[in-house]
Image 1 (cartoon, rainbow, N blue to C red):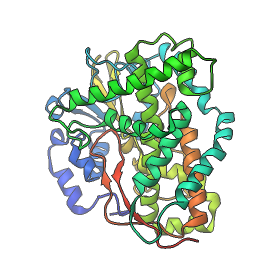
Image 2: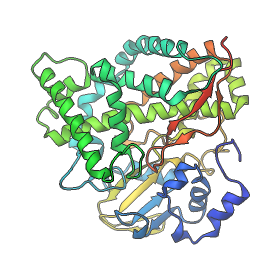
Image 3: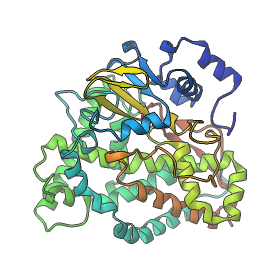
Length: 422
């Protein structure tokens, strides 16, 4: 293994290369639960970079997998042929539970709705938020135990990102963990342990309707007040969003919650894991804290918190030597593109002082590039500025428990021990 996390051993590669191409199934949850997907990506990049998965691989039918960096970039920046409608995951929205959201829209609706919420992450807002973020990170880190294991995911990553979400929504502070729960439910696979019944689809919908009901109360408060700087007030007063149907409001809420929660929290956890497994990189950072911004970008590439985004072909097109037909699904595998050895040197290694650390696909490209990418980088930068002041080492105990999902590449739990303080 090249960095202790990516299994490209002879045995793993032999398994990936020993099966027929049509038998490779990138949405097999076990590949993500065990973090063993990498040799399958490698093989597809080399042998079939625009690969058609047969219908039996997924309940929602056949789909194309695109695994090379430059091919992904070409699709992501061509919204005229590759549409974000009707959805950005492999699942098609159903007629009885549609969740329209602006990331799953094409222009002009996408542009107008995105413009409504983008001021929340404008440079002047980030400048205002930075001292708030730092104060909360300091309080959270100073409360951690020394010399005994604790769950970093829960105590640090979830707590910090949920506090940030509560601030952006001006959400009742005492209920902020509801945001985490709703985010997890919105992206959970049917066999997730989050579901407590034998009917996860019905259970999940009921939980998301509870989310809508809660946020409708906040909407009604904000729409009848003067416009303020929080996301709900922006949506309630925005010309492109104030007349949304309830399910579109819920869809955009889920987008903002997941976008502000899953991605940053999993990169926070991933940064600790990467540093633990690469002590030489931590030594570089200790010796030169000015490398923190570069380390943040490398972590976002290495982690790739959302493994893919889906597009739908609008008209027949020849692409990568294949004919893609109108209506077919295309999965852009950011996780694979970020490990494409033809574009990124030594891509499986975690190297915090890369020459071009921001050369990654994790935020997407084109009109759907992550609206909150600078806020995510800010939170990670401040977190590591404060970690360096306090903790000479962060030791991960055992293997982290990974999210069993081909969409969210994250951690359910990760036990960490802090041996001592500075």
